[in-house]
Length: 115
Image (cartoon, rainbow, N blue to C red; front, side):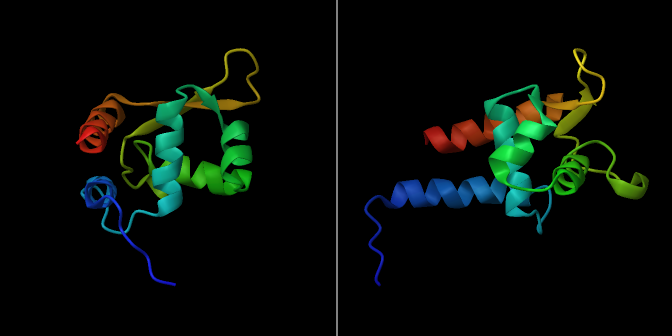
């Protein structure tokens, strides 16, 4: 099947969007990019809702949130785009919100997407 690009500027913007993430990490996984964008779409989203929407296990969501947080596993530095915090209504659960850096990165992404 041959693909025909109807609007090359949209494809260029998609490539630039991925490149924006690659500036932080050349090997950033697509699920981390998706998770970040999902949090930007709905700040203060619950970890369980992320699990359901992305279709990943709780452990995978936690690992990806950690990679996008200030400290990754084993105290390695993360990307500092997101932070997880205790749900004030139910301390058994965690929610996720963007950091200041995450908001700045998202502004760059919005400017890429608006062309």
